[in-house]
Image (cartoon, rainbow, N blue to C red; front, side, top):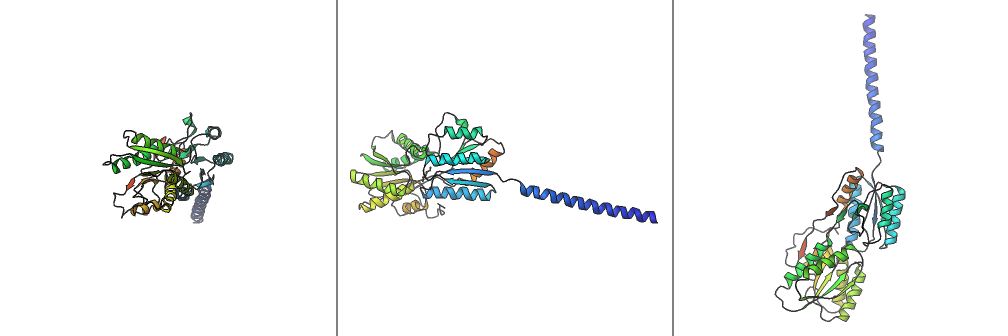
Length: 328
Ligand code: AHR
């Protein structure tokens, strides 16, 4: 009887010990999961020159927080040297992965070589770079700027299909040396090159900014009396140019046909009331793809070299009543 009691006693003790042990194991496992280091993405933004750019920044910040990654974000205020400095700081901090929107195409090889030597993957977002060594960056995420320029030209060909006269175009281009400015011009000229009635009478940079768009358009209106079309590389400059056009007593969208790129809410609203004739979409909502790509690169997975956004064209001929709010 006493022996049986001892056996029961030892079974009870063993059970208590085993359950305590497994509880301890759970306790040890839990904090380890919680303590796991969040992936750190360093992002060097080029500035805050337009509504498009603000939308792009918000999209990146929101996607990082939704995706539980740590974001080290900097704003270069439109200066390449600030962007290079920011990338150098991210390398020194040893972030897991770096992304940046290069303000201009040239001049990145040195800093990207430093990132490569530090073993930190880098990818481009929004804008391309020009380099002989494509191995310096993992991939590009953003728009196809040449295609945007071609889309603008196709709208013009359709708009003036029945007219047999010279169509005088002024071009408000973006930041000098920036890939969207170069691509949007190149695609536009290429697509119009087979129709000699389209004449680009001047092309001047408004640096993708509303204030400069207004200033440049003002000067163009003083110099040229015969403008049929304004082709503007972004909505911010278009909004400034429309101020200048209206101040000069000219009707935007009627006396001067206006094509703009981006698709900000303000531009879509002007398209709806006939002050802009065509808006080529350029999608700033790149955050989710950026975060997804950052995670893949840190895991060592391969990604496509070019990841293009899907984009639309909105024209004066479309019914836009049900178009959802743009969000930028
Ligand atoms: O690089 C994208 C361009 O940059 C957008 O069209 C413009 O609004 C921004 O400044």
